[in-house]
Image (tube, rainbow, N blue to C red; front, side, top):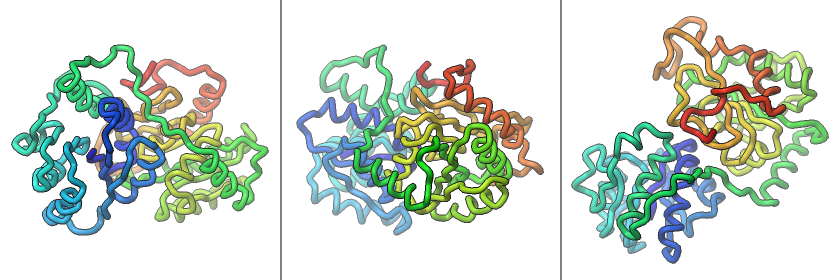
Length: 357
């Protein structure tokens, strides 16, 4: 059993390590345990044999381990690999009596684990994909004596099916999309931080520039709760015809729309990582957060950073009038970066630090 992570971006970044679990234990039945909103993402990755999900909004960290304990015991797992870095995960598999329990001994979890992967300074300095790979590298060395290849390039992509892409095309057609034009997908939301959101008027201006300068079809993606946000952006646009798919596309269909797109522009949130999973060209906007360890990781992932004296910060809402870190990124600058990416003229430093060169 692999305890996956609780967030979209972290899940995408853990996919290379999940593939390593399959490689290290080719004949084992592998179950991935994740929140229910991530189950379809895990299934689409086609790595696990089974997915065990739970509602993250029910019960709490105190009662949930005792409720999950019975479900885990019924499966009679021989081993638990913990990618999620939380005490609750280790406590739950300990209660369930899973004999081999592997993970990092952080958050006071050491006594609950039977295999403690060393969290070295080298791992801490690398991109987060290598954080999860540090666990599987440790297991591979202990069980098989293997060292990781220095030439390894982790793959965070998911192979989407012909049917997945067909459903995305059908949805776009239903929304009266002219698929003879190049699709540009914009993701203006950010569930876990409003401070990460590029202001709505700037998204509206960028959408108009894409229509006017690139003859693009603009498609907005987002969670159900972000539909009104997209509608407000559409109302600010001078051009018409942008499509609002917020709340209309599930996680796999969203990835399929991204793969059909010429490029995806996203705030620093889960949608940026979904674009990587979909093997789409993507540009992520960074303001209050620093790229580096948690930036989207892939050969087609690019970034553009704002600049403000108050950045970085971890505030949910920007405490400074005018949201300077995000407003320092202009729509014209984003369009110029898009044109550079599409032409292959990518400036130095536009990829995530720690990602592939």
